[in-house]
Image (cartoon, rainbow, N blue to C red; front, side, top):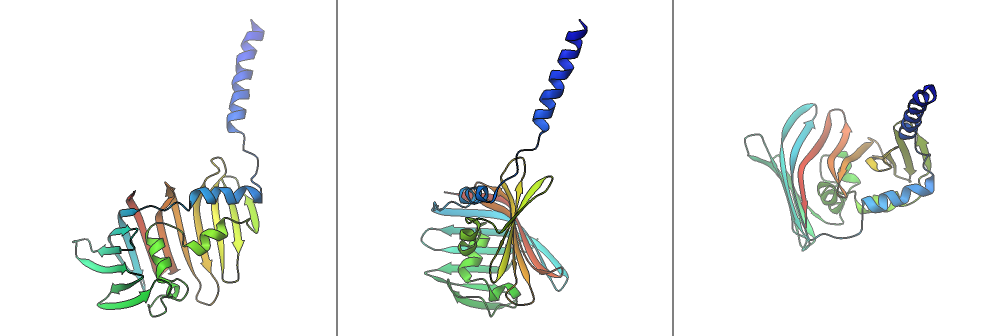
Length: 232
């Protein structure tokens, strides 16, 4: 009887130990497949997204909502609304070019053109097409390809695994859940010229990010939290 009494606690302890054991550390070669599945090359025909927006301009905070629509003919629209439903800004695109409108000004760009004329540091480094991909809850294509290569370094923390890629102009850091082995967030820090700025995307669902932030500093940034993203 005493053996039986000892047997069951030992089995329970062994099962608990297996359940709580930490998976073996990822290796550099394990990382690219994770992002190949996260950012598939398969194209969709239509995207409709809704969410909440926070914008800080020189420390002055604004909040509102966003509605994004895109189809595979290249037509794109993103409308930013104030809490009372008034449109306070918009981004439109069609036939390979488009506009950014806010604060009673409108800026025109081709898809491959960097947005140097915008009063934001990130405009120098992102093309208009890059911006549309970010608003469509995706990583811009040039940086997606980087994530599909072996990282320069890999750090195994207690809860997450941090993968780091370095290029001439930026650093890309990805956080991967250690137990789930799924990407949790990706952060791009652009260091080509000061002031540095960063893009962070995370909360991935069905290959798309539901949280996006473009940050120049603590006083100038905007963030989007999508509450609904529908892809056909």
